[in-house]
Length: 91
Image (tube, rainbow, N blue to C red; front, side):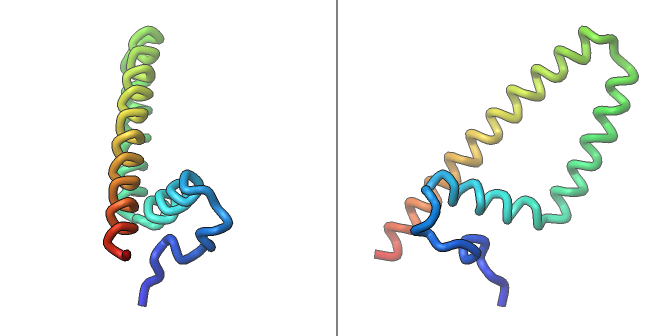
């Protein structure tokens, strides 16, 4: 039987934010599909870097930063909602 990512640490030793970070890391780091997507992204970024000037590259990096911040906020919100729902359903 597979262990749940949150079974690897005692809940009373970490803050809720630390718990969320640990769960996210455990899930994402163990996913081959996500690792493959990361490799594809890195290859595409290298091709793009060679194809654009410095201003274009800086604009891309800024866009990438904002997109990543949004994705991180979305993931955090979904995980918090899921954890809150799970807490309520266990009562």
